[in-house]
Image 1 (tube, rainbow, N blue to C red):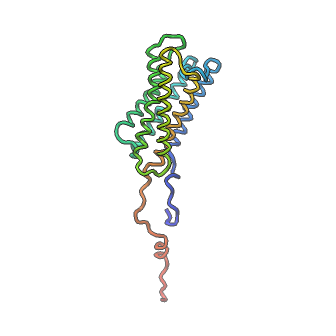
Image 2 (image 1 turned 180 degrees about the vertical axis):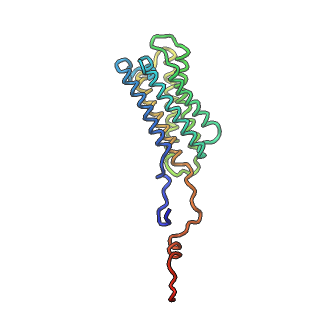
Image 3 (image 1 turned 180 degrees about the horizontal axis):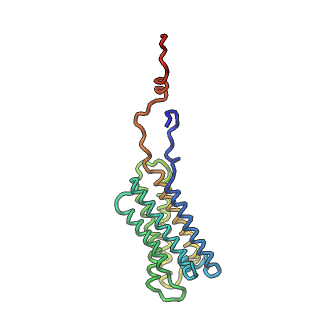
Length: 241
């Protein structure tokens, strides 16, 4: 690099983790859109849960694809966090592993059709869906607290999102689980599930953002040659002096 060229800002670096989440998050959203189209006229997107798409041809495969993609994205982001020192110890990795396995199990084990007695498949499906949302804030908390001196607003955004997501998940489960136990549920449950899926992708964006912005930058030369010195050394000697 020329000594006269400005030092590149760290936050202008190529944001690989954010790009990864953006590309694969679009694939996951696309899978959900496909499921919605396949289930149009059969599944009510406001009332019926996302899992009901499994009852239409091709819907179950779309759910499995969306969950598997988000599982892979989460593992990639947390692996990069470990590589850059923003994740340490077993907790963030274990939590993201639970998230990944849960997202796959949601697609592998479908829920029960309406009016059918609860089966083991439905129990695994519902437990996995709840677990995925419960453990995701744990990963964000572990990563955000590793940042000692922030370079950007990414840690603050992630901490706020972690608290907000944890409160929302706790409130949702506290209200919905007792209702589900007596055969009822939250009004507009389907809409809330779809919003939750988008929030999950947004949270992975925040995780990727902190990895990109707060990772150590490239090492700098501790003793750069000043531009004036370089010019003076290149100046020809006046022999007539």
